[in-house]
Image (cartoon, rainbow over all chains, first blue to last red; front, side):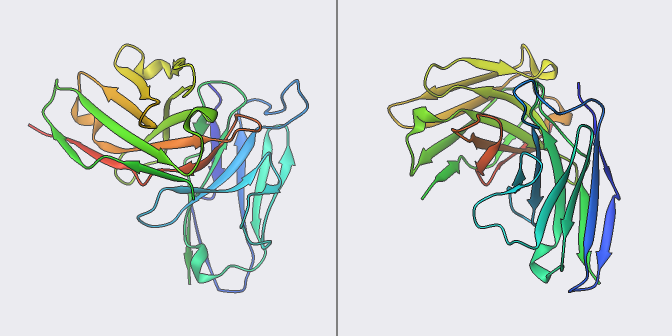
Length: 112
Length: 120
């Protein structure tokens, strides 16, 4: 199984400041079809996860442009350019290159 | 708009089975796979398996093989996940999630979850 490792476990951010989350996979997420199947989800308190980023760097519909994703192979990063109060929650990376799909352990973002 | 409405919370005894439903609306049910993901309280997300809503084909995580069954009723646009031989460790919120139709690789909409409590 592909192991997804996220760091840090938690972040406390001042509103308006940037934040960055790392996700490393135990094997390359680059598929033979040329796509990289790495996703980012945000789970706000008491809610199901919601998709932020698909295929490393594409923002899902309605996701603010302060969210961006980057990376390749086994190393990926989610960046929030200016954190807002509504961004609090737990962020998860996920791969879908092959079953079983697995998630990172999560990064909890809170506001200072 | 796309909605996945899940059944209500359940309390089960160890050894029993639970069947969770996920009623879809706002899109063509048979056009998208449905996956199930669970989350123990305060823990991370765990993928359980997938089901092709058109054909009924399924694939399960090895951890749940032999204990989980995913089915659907296309007439009512409802997906089901049944988990048997429950243990305390199965206490969790169970989510159904729709898979995107273009790449069939990620979850674009989620149900709100069904809490299953296993207690003696």
